[in-house]
Every structure is written in structure tokens, then in C-alpha cells.
Length: 133
Image (tube, rainbow, N blue to C red; front, side, top):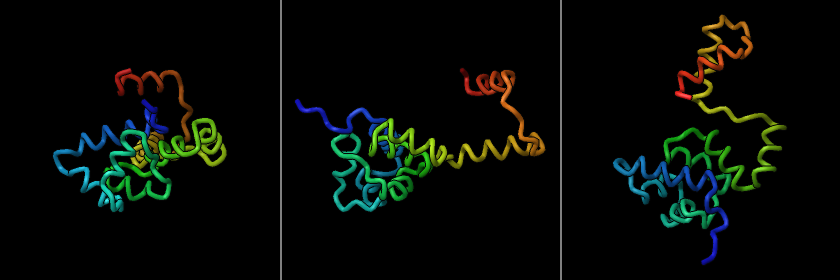
């Protein structure tokens, strides 16, 4: 049995999980159509890792999956160019920030009165409690 070239990538796993989460509201064929794919089988190929998600399709796929495009792009970069190159690209251009993460940043700025607070061990411990870690 031949291993699929993108099998096990974070993007393939995420797309598979997200489609399962949306299954009560949308079919896979509807997701494919909303993402602009003529052939709904493309979604199956992306989920299984037989095909990668083209980077120019990330915005439409993010809309169809109802996810943040920056998050999906981060997964797409790793799949498209490999982990090492994706890390280098992010190092040069910066970490993509999702809308949810931006909300956290705005809340921190509001709570700190825009004082640019340093992340202390106490603040890190509080975040760990919030996220159950």
C-alpha cells in the first residue's frame, strides 16, 4: 500500500475533523462547492492526504470550513513547503494571528491600559489554569 504524500499532516487531520464537526449543517459536497471546487472528491483527497490544499484556495476553504484563514494558512504552509521552510517563512514574516488570538491581544491591551505587559511566570500560570493545563 502506497503512503499518501500529505497523509498525517496537520492540515489533513484538521480538515477531516472540521468536516465531521460541520456534518449536521453542511455536506462535504456543499463544503467543496463553497470552497470553489468543481469536483467534491477533492475534499476527500485533501482529508486523506492524497492531495494538498493549494495555498490560493486557503481563503475560500477557510470560509467553507468556517475557520480563521490565518490558522488554515499556517497549516497550509507547512503542508505545501514543509515544516522547516514554513518555520523560516514565519520567522521572517511573523506568526499569522487568528481573529480569536487578536481578540485576546486586544483584551490584554485593554486590561493593561496599553502598558505592554511582560509575560511573567504568574501570568503564564494564570493562562495555564484558564486552558486547563
